[in-house]
Length: 398
Image (cartoon, rainbow, N blue to C red):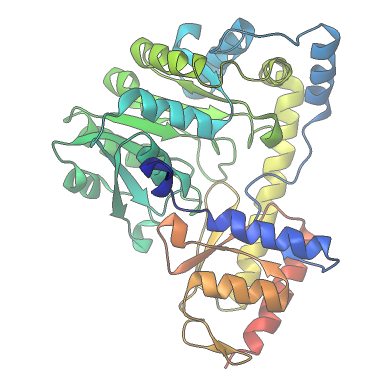
């Protein structure tokens, strides 16, 4: 007996491997500076935590509708209207177990075997794997550093074939920190409107946008809105990663299909987390104060990390959103540390972790083999300390 082919084709996560090794070193008493985090280092705001307690006191411990409680779906509609100028009905909203689950539902609801999904590289490492689990075919489009690794309209047009079913847009982007401007989105929209295809727009880092006003590609036209599945969630905006609440907005047909799929797989999201998310979105006073503070803190860390990297003469992509910086490994390749020759981003990440006690993420699994990803979801003290360690590591290379 053997395991299913779909399970065999899924690549292991290098992100989780490096993170697990760093955690084990810490558990063994070794001081490790981690730039590997994929989540805010802020605790969930107190007003949301208190809402969780209240949900328990109210007896919200039973099943809910599979697509989410009505008040949460209504609050999500209000969020789309006020933040994105998009009008949705609650029946077009599906609340899932995190943004990743929303993506899984979206592709399970839209892909047939052999359907192609265009994915610009660098990409979040789970995109190709989720597409493959849904029997789709990932079509990777290599983007260019001179375009800040944003896919252009010309690159998108060239990748479209008769088998193209969807295009993934991650804005702001993980791992590059790239942000698509209104001009960028309009150019992409012009191409998409000429073809019969969906857009899956992952906007999970929407609120961590430092130099531009976020715009959803779904707002480009009524046609784009009808063809776009907007994926978002509570994790990055409200530092609720462990609460596992994501959501998607789509046309009635797709939303209904996603809800049906979910009803036969996980069913509803945790009821307490749903109520807490409803309060998170509804309490604008506390929510906006938290977001303003978190965004300002990340922006200051972004500036600090870029300054330190520049002083080390390391080449990096300036991030405009999210909380990551992609750093080129070209200056490391072929050099050796204590006799060990560095041959890849993974090799560099492993050597840094073992010898300098600094955790970074190799970007091979993100479609960017010449880069590592550093997260500035770390304190300024840790950013300073970690980059001193990296500087010392560099000084010992031969």
